[in-house]
Image 1 (cartoon, rainbow, N blue to C red):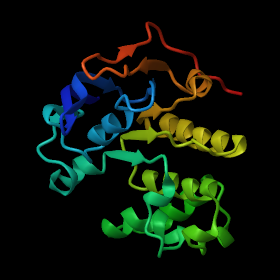
Image 2: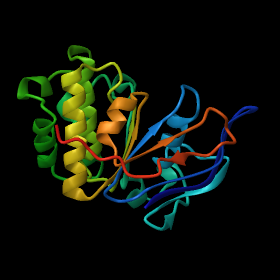
Image 3: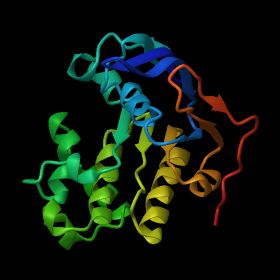
Image 4: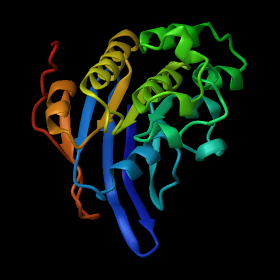
Length: 229
């Protein structure tokens, strides 16, 4: 279980999240909606251990997080992967797509065979893998970022508006890759999106984050069936 308990985050005098609790179970896809500025991306960064909250705690499969970013144990850091909304802000522009995908494997000193497999699954042809970010489209770069996020087999995947501004075919491919990964690995997925139709088709259950910092996430009362179309 990826769990946030009583999380509070403030930016200056503004409280974005106020004693919020949230959880994602292994093997489920939770859809999270809400208006712009309500704290969805902040919650995503907290759950991915990228942002230290002002209060509360995060635990991964029952293990409380003792630190954040590089201060978190590697086993916890690599158990949660975050896929950002804007892929160009999440990559080193000097690297090729092949190098971007293989970054986590290189850092962990692991073989890079899995990177090639995931690139193919994400629909990236060999000629695209030799290109740098400025030489590919946003959709192609986001495919590479998704492949990179899955290289170390995270137990939980946090997708923060990963399909925003992408064409329908790329959206469908990315959602399909994530759904297949969930089914193969039993991973839990948090899917954040403004697109309620997408969340209805994608998620097992949905939750809504209010714009008021003091109001909690309210889960949908029953699972939303996934579409296989």
